[in-house]
Length: 345
Image (tube, rainbow, N blue to C red; front, top):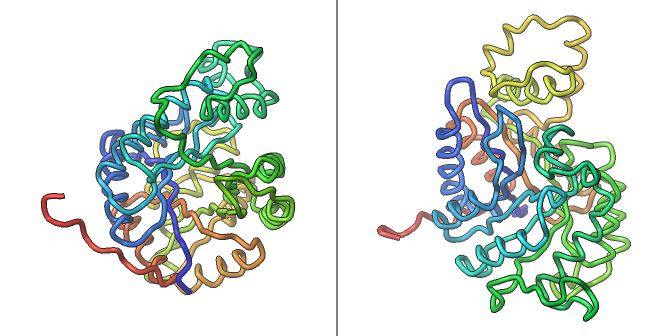
């Protein structure tokens, strides 16, 4: 089964390495994924998080597109409530001009952070909610087409470069809101299973059932985003997964959030019985195990959601182990390698 695989990257910062190393690791992972046959490489937007270096996806998109040749590179995503639609249009038109037909614009309506940080990003109490998201999305589309109504206050404002199209827009979500909106306006849709796995099947099926074709997306295209880690054995994979599980757990448990811990550091953590229960609940959301075990579980979910593509988030402490995990999953899904870049490219 040669099934399209893609990567969602947050540039994890570990207790051993700093931000610069995390970003270098992301570029290295992108080079590897490009040769390994992955379809897309998307960068997340998160703020005020010591374990995540990906705060500004458009900067990393330019770096990674320059270092790769085959994959599409995009945002997973730009959190639109944090940004003016005009600025988003300008940034991604510029990226499209530099790397034609290789850029994706993934849009989300969550802040990608806590409420206080969201306020500091937006500088206004009135913009802390996402209720105006549909209007902001419409403004983004109008800046892309240059077609505001003549009486609109932005009718004379153009998003440059004007002779370059805006890349395809994908809506990201973990509930039915973005799925319904994506289906209404004819956009691609990516569902974050690692945030809300219980709704993956009904929400992705809803998107497909209600989809209205558009010029950019004549057919629905649904991406299933999951957190997955694989190793040569189930035991090794379970060890690798401790780092990501603890990172998610610390958020839910209200602990001080720090860089990604090593498996050894997680094992040494003095969990209370209540904390242990929360940790195990969070850990169960990840797809962890040998390639065969992870492939079997993910294949069932792909069939249930009718996903067109699988996007994998792998947060592990050791960079080489992360590369190996993505290689094992590509082999399990029979993804054909594209090949190395020619010398001097």
